[in-house]
Length: 39
Image (cartoon, rainbow, N blue to C red; front, side, top):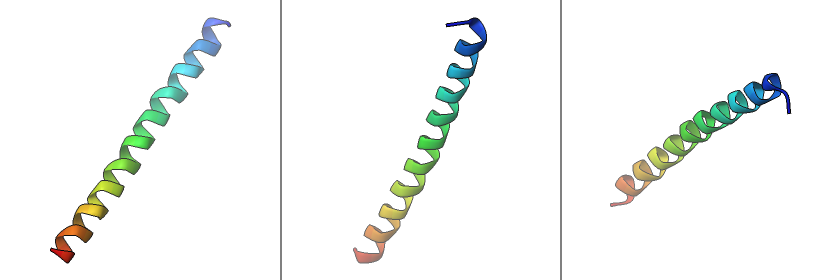
């Protein structure tokens, strides 16, 4: 693996991490809102 490939892999990994964090916080926020609506 070349240093260039490694750099791209790290970039995609960080991007995926940020994306999953955004998705999870959205999902959790929605669930909490639904639970508060029921309670």
